[in-house]
Image 1 (cartoon, rainbow, N blue to C red):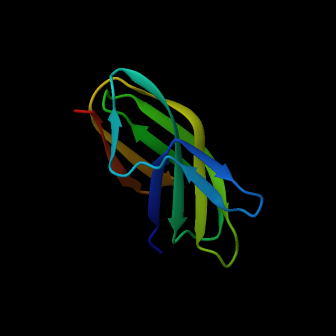
Image 2: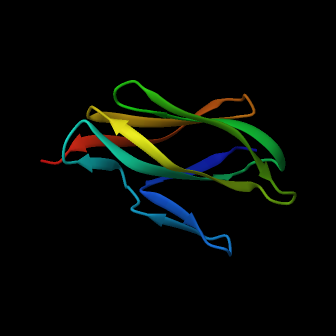
Length: 125
């Protein structure tokens, strides 16, 4: 089964009691800043589909334009009779010191490293 991933970068993520996610301040293709360097609050929501049921180890990596990386390693569970999961990474501070490309990757159970979304960081003109 092939895994596909939807990625949303946003300012904050909240989860309601009924399980719905609220994504606040979602970014499209770029992060436009007034100045550099800057530290900004950031959250990321991933929706995975095509995942086999069970417990899975993962590594999610955000590569910043200056060459530094933010790395998350953990596990998630996919319920029987379901092939999807949601992962949230909230409350982080992203230190941006240069314009350029942010790239993200995901590796599940030591398998293929999947290149996910790309976002461009640029100064407002």
